[in-house]
Structure formats: C-alpha cells, structure tokens
Image (cartoon, rainbow, N blue to C red; front, side, top):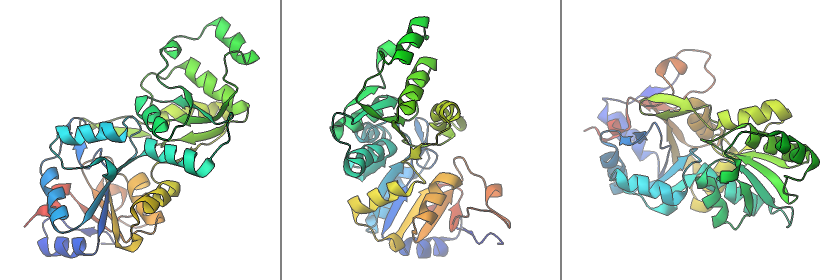
Length: 305
C-alpha cells in the first residue's frame, strides 16, 4: 500500500512474524482493550497469548480520571490479567514528572488541580501537596464576591507553583478563573494529557483537552502535556521498565497520541487497532503525517490461528 502500513488481520504468518519482533508491548486501554464498561471480545485471551510467548505488557493510558489502583479494579472487573506495576497512566506520569523532574522546593511546590480524584491519588503517592480538584466548595457558580477575592489574591493559595489539568467532570467558570489567576502569577502549566476526545460506549465524548482548552484560550499559554505523545512520558516508562525501544511496540487506536507516541519515541513498531478513534482513511494513501507500521481490525486478530 502507498501508506506503507501492513494489514495483519487474517494473515496468521504475518501476525506471528510481527509479534516475534518485539519483547515488550505498550497498550493503550480505552478503544483498544475496551470501550466504556465493555471489553472487546477476545481481549483477555489475546493478552494471555502474548504473556505465554514471554512478552512483557505495559498498559499506557491517557485517561487521567483513574489512579493505577482504580485501573487495576477495572481490569479485574473485565477478567483481564494485570498487576498495578504494569499500569502507567497520565496522572501517574504527571506525578512522577513533578516529584522527580521538577523537584520544586517548598513552600512554592503546591499543585492546583483541574481534574478528578485519580489525579489527586497519584499526587498523594508522590507526597505532592495540592488544592482544587475534588474540593466540593468549588462546584458552584461564581459570585461577585469570588471576583473580588480572586483579584485581591485572598482566594488564592500563595504556595501554588503548578496548575495541572486533566479530565474534569465538574469543570466550571470558578475553577477556570482560579487556574487563570495562578498562571498569571507565574505558575507552571501542566496537563496530564490534551486528548480532545474520549472514546466510550462506541462513541466519542469530550476528553481532557476540553478541560485545558478554556485556560489555553484565556491565558494564551500552552501546557506541557505529560501523556501520550509526550516524550517525557516515554522517558519515564523507559526508566521504570528498562525496555529496549527497538524491541518495543506501541498498540493504540489513535494516530495523534498512541501511534505518534511510538514513532517519536523511536520504538521498533506501532500497531493501530480500528476499534477506537482513528480510521483507515486517516492513514491510508499518500501524504499522511502519522502512519502505523501495521494495523488490525481488532486486538483479538493477533490471536488468530
């Protein structure tokens, strides 16, 4: 094909040859292993097949709403074999980056969170102080008194040095205003990820990028994203798992995050599954910017005999 992407579905010999090239497989989750609360047929069996061949599996998700422990519960609920140490989510990636890369000195080391409990849990795991997030007092309409207190600084925590955004199911004007105020005071702008959409229940919903978008527009600043395709995330994964990039394959459903992540990271291979966001039309033909090494209709095709 002109795209150079190999179609593996229905070709057992090509699949076997492809699998043999790699020691480690990095898997996206939403749109690859499952959609919403339903796993795709054959997912558990395919992963077990790879384990039985001696392959190492790492689950790399941009979903910031769940901590690693919460992700483990989701794997368990779908009868998919997995342990916590194999999970590397964008919230965990952000926590690792803040604690081990930035290493901000107290007291100016607090994080203002625009997101949900999964982010807070991973920040706690690295002993990073934080405000905002699931604070119930911020789930309301903004008042005239709030305008005055934000403008004067009375409502702001002087120790906040970072604004971290992720998917927030309760985003509102008050939370955005606080985030903007911290950025205007010099706080760093980080994002767990900037995915524009979230695949779930066989359709698309707004992703974490929809949470950061108002802040980007209002402040004129772009966040450093710590999920795919950020190479800060790839470096952290390589450091933790000591993987050989040339013997590693990234498996995902989205070209501009999963596949780009693998290509920019210099991985030996990338595999796109067509059960999520991207379609064949997005990469087949000439002039396409991001093209996977290979693709299948669904993950279970890897286990075809």
